[in-house]
Length: 259
Image 1: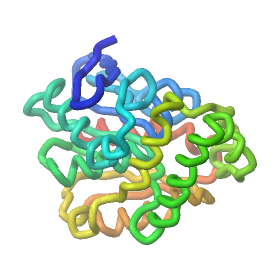
Image 2: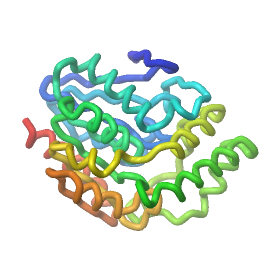
Image 3: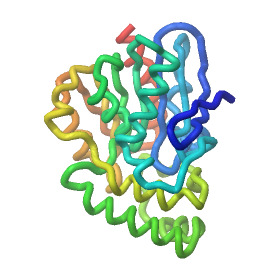
Image 4: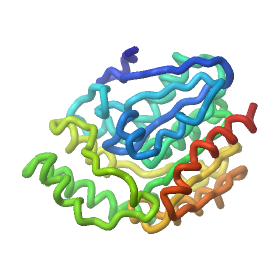
């Protein structure tokens, strides 16, 4: 498996080269390429005829990382993304897809380098702006919990939280982050927010926003504000696992429409 060096980490990368347009796929907080497949969030499984780049964010999955919260800010993860795009697809525009932290990373990268993206498919965008401070405090408390009770304590604390109905069929999984890095990863998320409204409003990039209901960590309000801000965005809000299973078709249609 290729390794891609970035400051403070080596990223685990895989590319499926079937010719055609370049696509880069990200994952969510404490997840990875392999965990997103288990959770039915691997939208790239529905693609053919593309050059699909998947990778694990620093500190996640098979990628390495440091015990430094700043490394895991969404703006820092956007630096890593742009380095990958410049290396694997120099001079080309790519279509970006990812859930939650991955969606946030894509937005930060697009604000910084809008000419590098042909389109975006953003899944379950996370808490942002007015809803972010409360979530950031939860992440800081979770980091302390991991330090005092370990990953098992972290998992146990979240076991009784109600699931969004769209994830009712998802299996139980564990964070795909080493225990020694998890507090820094959580504190990095606590330091993060989506770009400012006016910066997002300048993104003239075709965008599909996919959301689900009844998830305080990924509120529909974030998705709707993004669609109001982005000049060329549409939104789909779902409530069942069956509807989530159709999301790979949405990505396929997004990529095909742009090519």
